[in-house]
Image (cartoon, rainbow, N blue to C red; front, side, top):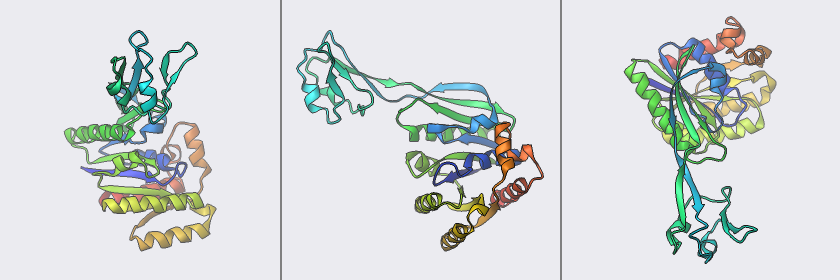
Length: 289
């Protein structure tokens, strides 16, 4: 079983659109949406949920006003200024400032502070027209997204092995944060989607440094290549220095936008379009390399 993770240095390069297009071509694959902070692969897959699980992350701190003696020890020791006096003179927690360190709970002499795990996150195993999709939904501002990525990846690989699938294809997150690191750990190949803009080029450089530190074989697709040929040349030089093959140069294609509005991949929308043919050839290369 081979695990392929599709990444980009920034959002908006077409990473998810290309991942979904690969799903239209690939056979014997399980799919996994690693972009748990802003998951969107399900919008194209239109999955039917088979299994649903809660994912606990971070801590929700509660002050018992009946037990609290208003000694303010917790306020003095909170480095995040997350505890404050309300208009009635009681103590409250600002959830936007609280980091869940639980120091206040440990030092409260009256044991008036308690913590419970947040469970505002869910992950799913679903059926789709392309096959099994493992995906997740995090609540706004929730923590431990990297751990959630590891959880959905673990499940996707378990399913692939139990069903004798050849591939796990991950739609990774943009950037170089903890979710990207969790997406890279243990993957076999990375497909990097780059667009020729200055911000995308800068962020791709940082992402490639991260990929290189994991010693993972990487390949690239330059999407919307024809919007800036000068930057394409810079991308080519950089990728050549890093020995990263370019699998396809995909032009800016309005049909790609049309396919998204119809809830289809570009391959479903126009199977013989230039973009579809280029993505097919890219898949042929990465699936056997």
